[in-house]
Length: 426
Ligand code: SF4
View 1 (tube, rainbow, N blue to C red):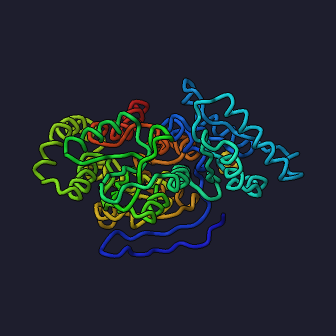
View 2 (cartoon, helix red, strand yellow):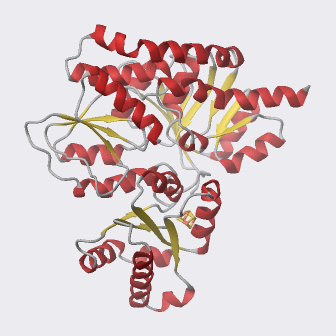
View 3 (cartoon, rainbow, N blue to C red):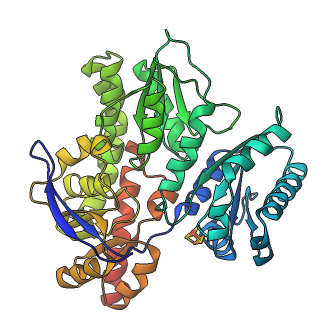
């Protein structure tokens, strides 16, 4: 992609101005999402239809999962496949058959598209239909694209969950239920389930579920609360099936988690005093944990490069609860519908950019010299070599960071490189 324009636009309602930038970007593609999705949905298999590059990316991104039973693989389209798409389809059917025979525990098979041209020519939706017919009653076969041409790394989850929406069973019109949207580590999901139960909110379902055979019901009585800010397409697909979306901040830090729970409590008519009583012990624990990290972070200057789409809520947490100074907050997309509550919490005058032009952004980092830059893996090493401290944004999706009990861990992710930098200087 080439640089085409830079323009500033004002959000409505006194929200911060967004500077739109377009140009070259350096981000992982949506295949990275398989690493946390396969860990969450325990009876799903992700078959990437791609090239050797895709296989290498998955292997290195998933290197951290060395002890897990792998439930992902890459069907590599060799050059001979280019001769005819029929061969590719046969090859795909053969690989799928092999996997399903070897792994009878698999109940959902995702065919994941990538960006090589031979994959783009292959109709994966048709292939999923064909395989669904072949394995009907035993395995559900779905498809989505994680191509680097269409997705940044967190959008892979959005595309995956969107493909699940048509599969959700119809919920009964009368019974109101809460659907929490976005992958959460099981331990965090359990904490939230306990809080909702204590508040008297329920039934509560989570998407994605731990088992693909256990899909939550969906209908006009479904109320959706987003746990991750990068799931706009899934949220809109749920709305099209009648669900109502709650406006809330994201559950990062004490303030965000409390606001998130309050949105659900208000929808269920739970009195404010009850919310206060139920959350008080967890808030007290979180405040104690955060105090130490705040000492390390307060007054430090931070820049976010556009990568994970978590930038705005995390910046809000670091500025309001940890006392950091926001030099620049750049994010791949600003989805105003999903960011309404978060944008209102950013300080006025913050430098907020959407999209990306990696060269201009790096120039600004070099001029600003923030204490910490949050960025993708590919940009971290060159910046470190210039004496600038960095934090990999991908850690935000591999680490439990949501909720009261993880607030201090979230802050510590940012304090650690500063402490290490100070030690190196000594
Ligand atoms: Fe690279 Fe595209 Fe494969 Fe992602 S999907 S690893 S960007 S070739």
